[in-house]
Amino acid sequence: MSARFLRACASPADFPQSELVEIAVVGRSNCGKSSLINALTGQAKLARTSSTPGRTREIVFFEVTLPGAPTFHLVDLPGYGYAKVSRDQQAHWGALIGDYIDNRRELMALLLLVDIRRDIAQEELDLVSWASERELETRLVLTKSDKLAKNKRFGPAQKAQTALALARRPLLTSASDKPSIEALRRVVAALVSDCYSPET
Image (cartoon, rainbow, N blue to C red):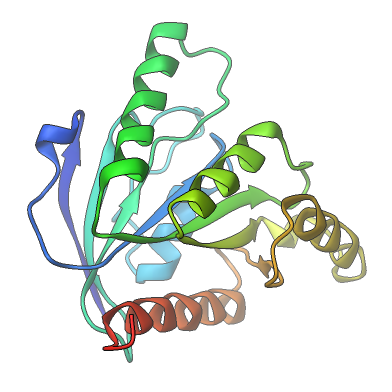
């Protein structure tokens, strides 16, 4: 298993030219995206973490190899929904993310991260609809599951799956819970391998 920072992009012109499959990670500001990326790749400082929501201002590309899968790009999209960011900045992020999802031919799937304690919002509904239009697979990843007792997790997970009308069950994760990260790692590795298979 290996991972390295590749590039941070403020505009589509900066996107790397590559034939590698891309899996994008998207979620609301402060949903634990950077921590989960670090846990997934096994590198504690790969993605910068911050207690301040909205810290990620660019699309960040990482080159990653997971056990049992070819090398791919894991792409960290700017977090959405942070009220203290200016409208101009929000508009820029929205346009940047939109251009990436609409036009990036290497993009094959989205990992949609949602804090398990939050209800599904319009942004998540829009993202799933957007991905569906592009025929991208979307996997719902519920983060910070350790914040709820085990017997309190099923309800929110089922509610989120129903709200987004997703066929697959959400993945319940915590950056500090190794079994859940291993399960996520296997799912991502399978996604990547499927994208490289001759049938796709």
